[in-house]
Length: 502
Image 1 (cartoon, rainbow, N blue to C red):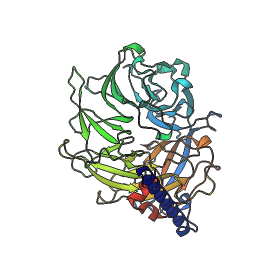
Image 2 (image 1 turned 45 degrees about the vertical axis):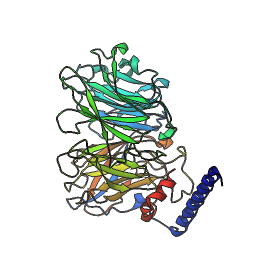
Image 3 (image 1 turned 120 degrees about the vertical axis):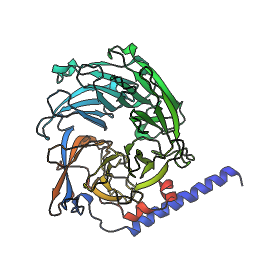
Image 4 (image 1 turned 45 degrees about the horizontal axis):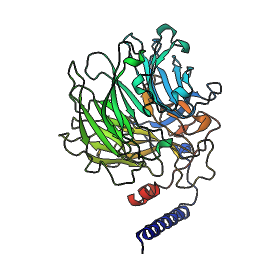
């Protein structure tokens, strides 16, 4: 029998097998399951009070007077106007908007403006904030998937007049690919900021698409004294990779300067650029991050497979070395244990396996105040984005919000605590901030994938002596709140989950 026919038969067997598994799951798991958001909290903090959550809105279509703020993605907070209150810079990639929300002494009152919109910020991604021109005011740098990085200069006293913000797109970044991440860092510790950015070559819908594209660079940029001089920015490529998706500054080796951890989606691997700069020269040495010899897995490369797309850093095992929290699959969060010698492989540990949901944001914070870092995350729902799926099945990928409690043994599976689970939503980032100054840590986040519900929100943490509803949503009309699938679905064998994720 020809080999091609054998391959076709094998694929049919696998497909029929998966259909059978799906039907069996529906039959076995039939019956009523409780809606996540309606459950009473059963989680206690160290003070013995129960933890629950309340949603507050900052910016969306309704609050903006009808602006379609679709695809809220990156978010950063800083005091842009110098009034002592934190402000928010958010980017909305599906409808090409950069928004500024100015804070006040009331965490539910925000004064919001559109800084930029239209094709020149097409697919705008994560912002970076810092005093880039050295005038004492916080400026903004953004990566644009449509084709450049863009600098916005804070005008100072006229900060709330958007026309007073001048901008520049460095010539070396224009028309060279698709920029997805940008950060600011002082690599040589001379008091001046540099930029580091990731060019993934092509713009892909929802992170999917062919990986057979030309290699593109992870670069750091030398910023001129006048950042508005577009021709004076100098790009320094650090390495070329297939669909690189991150280049995050962090002092991973603990020597006092900022290194860079990069990641490639097309190669499903992560790379360390160790900072070897001097006072007069910025330079890096490339090291592979070999994860138990599985840094470059067999094809097909699936979304988020050790690509470093999202990373968080902490010394989880208390050995005085920073570890990395990231994904090994679209449903599994892991942490990578830094070896005592960076030439050795990193040990991999599972934090949580959340199939069918696909976590995105990774925020480490001691939520229950037991002295151990926990992990707050949120799900990335499947299409469609403009309406809820009718009668979503057990395998529907929901828009969950949940946190994972670190156990006493950090190598054990972390304990999942659910907050909310909607039919639609995407939570790219969740930043810790005590928004209402009550001494409890809240979280500021963005939401996409949900049409008119896209935007910026904050999640208030509450403590009560008696159990309360675990989540109170801000809107009366919302995307449908869902139940969790049975827990044993998340415990299916890896080979089954891998097949279902294709």
